[in-house]
Length: 294
Length: 339
Image (cartoon, rainbow over all chains, first blue to last red):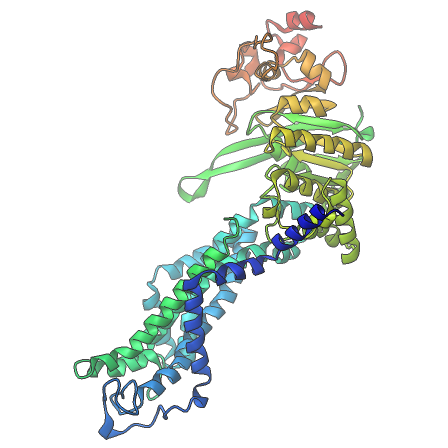
């Protein structure tokens, strides 16, 4: 092999990396996405390792140190209406808030993808049955639906998880169905059928790889909605119960202090805002990084 | 030719698509995509199928592959009909297809090697054997396996992608290859290379081709016999010499006259096609070409028009003018004039 051939061969080696490696490289070159992922990781890790951070007890209040402002010695983020350390409560609150934000979306991602892929791939009457059922859920605003289901099931974290999952299944199903329908009509699926492959093999090899990416991106953008809805449920008393730290619930209980100490009262809302913005920007970044054809 | 000596025989193949609309999704019309199409394919030949867009060429191909379920008709390989001694899976292994859109027909998430090896894997070959086969086939279609096995479709040019598609179709050792506009989307220079590759492969592997195209020059170059379709029906079928030299159906003649010539002295002589473009939704009874035909007469509206043999049994045409007893005023004159 001549030197030129070797150069061409090594050049092709560089070009031919796997799809996900390409996506990863493109993500790393996007400063916004990298920043968002860093912030999310920081909050997530802080929430997971909260007990080891040497924080104050998030449940121990003090009647004489209520509603201290931000920057008070010993209480960098001040104290809440019962004199509990806000920093500790915000970090511990991330545990529940992130949990109820992410878990329903993961559940809905799995269930909605199955429904959507089946509807899109099989088509016909099954598509009709699944998609019209989904349309029924679309008739309700998502907040109202979450409140209605939560209210019917009763208050509690588990029930709010269930209700949020139900709320997110229809949109994910619809996205999965439309992506699957478009992929299913491409010639390579026909070519796979022509080589004698069964439906299961075709879905596994040819559909999933082309469909899961876009559904996943869409699902990531739902995490912020889920967190806000979960906070809303807690705010209404349908989710977490006091004294459990959770951002939505904290926002609710600090509401009365908004004129006395507005900055402290706004902190839980700021956390919700930052996390949902980061998830949204991250899913935008993922979407453009996964658009390989450009 | 009897059905027995044909490698593939297609009889009365029909597919109607319902057009739904209005309240309650009722069927309001029917698209006669393919209507009573019959032909036979001999081993080792290339049958060209030509016609305008929407005349049912591609639907015919997909029906033969059973990618679309036909409404009626019989497809037989070596005399064994699908459903009576021949499974659809078997049919699909022995008949393979190359699609027009080289990009859409390759899974963007699979490497070239995985794409080609998929068929053999599905048919039960070991991973190692399938990979080996993919590499051999890549070499056979003129792509260096060392350079191309790990590549993805978006890293290939149109010509390279179509070569991969051909390799994928050959991976199951088919007897018949259906080329559905397989070279139409390529640049002229690349098209010529791929056409020559197809001719080489055919000689090397003893393949039989169904070559679907709207490019009459290419069809003339590659085909042994040509079938002309109009609105889902076969209007004329015959050897490439008979069709290009002594076409009988007014539609075939109009098509050929529209074929651009390389010689500026040979200008178009016959009138180009007039009238509405064909619409396969609820076509008129009788001859479907009638509304655009310069020779149409009342008799042409009559039903029961069939493909009829001319002088040689191989050249058949569905036109009232070519049937002496049809009652068309030009019927006898046309025959004596050309015969």
